[in-house]
Image 1 (spheres, rainbow, N blue to C red):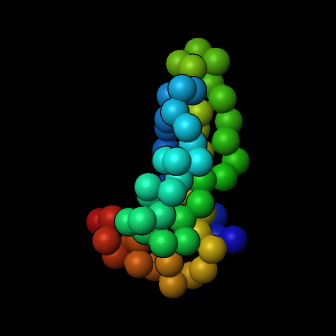
Image 2: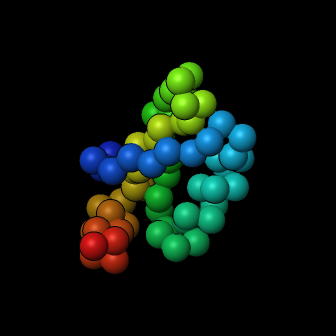
Length: 64
C-alpha cells in the first residue's frame, strides 16, 4: 500500500466504508487509512493511500 501526503476529514457520523466506495468509483485503488479521531471537532482524519503506484499516479494527474 502506498501512503500519500494527502489527508481528508469526515464527520464522525459518516459511514466511512460507503464513503470509501464512492471515492473508489472515481479513483480506483484508493483507500482511507490511519483514521484518527479529533475529539474537539468530532471529526476523523484519514490518510489517503493507494493499492498500486499506477493508481496513485492517476490520482495526482487528475487531482491537480
